[in-house]
Image 1 (cartoon, rainbow, N blue to C red):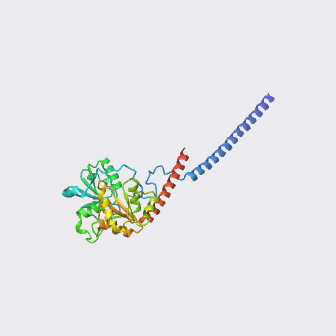
Image 2 (cartoon, rainbow, N blue to C red):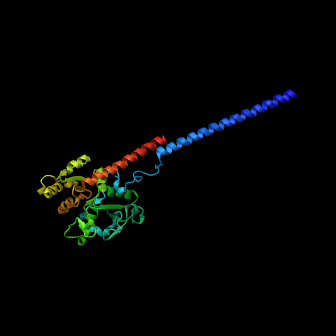
Length: 315
C-alpha cells in the first residue's frame, strides 16, 4: 500500500511539472509571436502610413478642386448664350456660383450661392436657374449642371462666358469704357486665367492654345501642349491673325482660346484689343505654367506611390 502511495505521489508530481512546463513553453511562444506581430505591425504602419481609403479622390490631395480635373464627359446641353436669354432674363433666378466672392463685387440681380451650397437648396429646385460662374472654363459648369439635375433641380442652365458674358450683356453701364468688355470697372480683368484653371480645361480637351512670343511654342511643346496658332511670325499682323483664327473656327466657339506668352501684360493687351468672349490669356505665362505642372505632377506621383503602398499593405 505504501509503495502504491509513493508511486502515485511521484506520478502526480511529474504530471504537475509536465503541465507547468507546457504552460511556460506556451506562454513563451505566445510572447514571442506577439512581439513579432507588433514588430510587423509597426513596420506596416511605417511603410504604409495612415489609411486614407475613406477619403475619395481627388479631395484627399493637397490640390484645390480647381487644380484637379473632374474627368467627366463635357455636356454642353445646359449652356445658353446671352442672346438666348436676354428677352426672358426676368423669368430666371440668377445664381452667382463663383467661389470666394465675398470680397468681389456681386452681380446685380443675382443670389450668391456656391455650387456646394446650392445643391442643398431644395426650395430652388423648381425654379428656372441661370448659373453664372467664372468667365473661363466649361468643365466645372458642366460637371455641376449634371449634378444639380441628378439631385432633382428641374431647370438648370449656365450662361456662356460666365461673369464676362453676364457683365457684357446685362451690366454694360458699370463697365470701364476704355478697357472694353473684357474688364469690369469693379471686377478686375475677366480675361485672366490661372495655370490651375487652364490645366483643368486642357486635361478635359476643352481649350485651344495660342503661343505668343519668341520661343514660346517650343516651350509649350516641351510641356506636351498642342499649339493651335503660333503668333511668333508676322508680328505686325498678330491681331489680324488672331481675329481670323477665331472667325474661321466658329463651330468651336464654346471652346475657350488661351493666349500664352512670356510676357503676360503683352498677351493681355492683345486679348483686350480683340475683345472676344471665349478669348483669354494666361496670367502665369509660359514659365509659370511649367512650374505649376512640375508641382502638380510631383504631387500626383507621390499620391500614386502611396496608393500603391496601401494596396500592397491591404493585400
